[in-house]
Image (cartoon, rainbow, N blue to C red; front, top):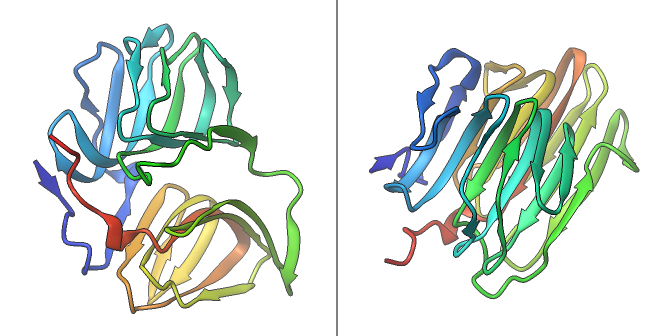
Length: 222
């Protein structure tokens, strides 16, 4: 399966407007945003766990990165409330679920194969002011990518050359970008060489963004 697999193209999806589709696990639904592969795939998705649902124990051969958007995600390592950013690199394993239900934004098979840096953090704490009305926290950085959480005051502008492309997910508020209005749940991917400039709306905006990773987009190993 290929979905939005041409990484030279700009893609904007208002995820709250697309239907949920059932996954192979009962009680776990998803909204697919991009994908190369079938059930083992390089994939970006929003995944919803019904109360009491869970996945079977599994190893992350290609790594897993996610944000908890709503509720509390759980595994044998602990509870992950909304606002938590998690990186589970290749070779890690767990049995994920949600006793009370949760929704996550998740990326699979998008790690450096040699990355072993496993961590979780509250991405909304300890931000630093980097420009007028712009607060930022760098969540992760390596030779392939940089991941930030940003909180923009109303009308604030944030720009980046976005070398290697970028993608962002709006978590709260609104953004203007290239004449489009991005709202809570909007997912934007811009290709390498296009650059990125966003302006927060009247209520400000909070968003997650990853930069530099698109040249490494390949199908999972067979």
